[in-house]
Image 1: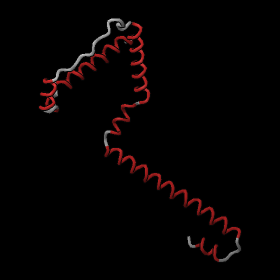
Image 2 (image 1 turned 60 degrees about the vertical axis):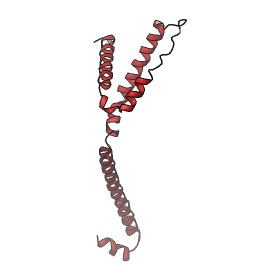
Image 3 (image 1 turned 120 degrees about the horizontal axis):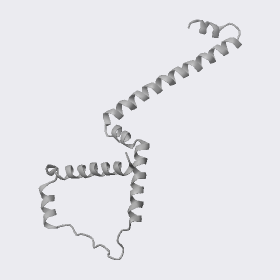
Image 4 (image 1 turned 30 degrees about the vertical axis):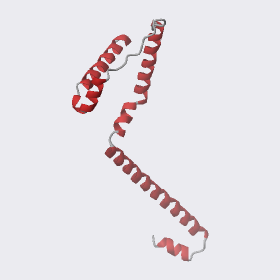
Length: 135
């Protein structure tokens, strides 16, 4: 597929999303609808002296393409999906904490065991060797 075809499909999907959002009237309060009807939006006056040129439009399209590439490359949608579920974040953090705690405990036991064995080998047989013999 060409870039222009992909951009056209993305533009159509954005237009469809906007069209579907505008149909969701149940989300908007009646007061907001009445206020919008009473005060129509003011359209900004367009400057006749500087119409948008094709260079500006091409630069905008290039910037949007770069932004889309950045979002796809960083997998921002995956991060947003994980962050949108607090239960999932809680479970992931809990499991990471448990695994980190188990790793710390194993490491501390290894270091303590090695230290006791080194001390036991340097001291004459006595209380340390009897202590090590218990284990």
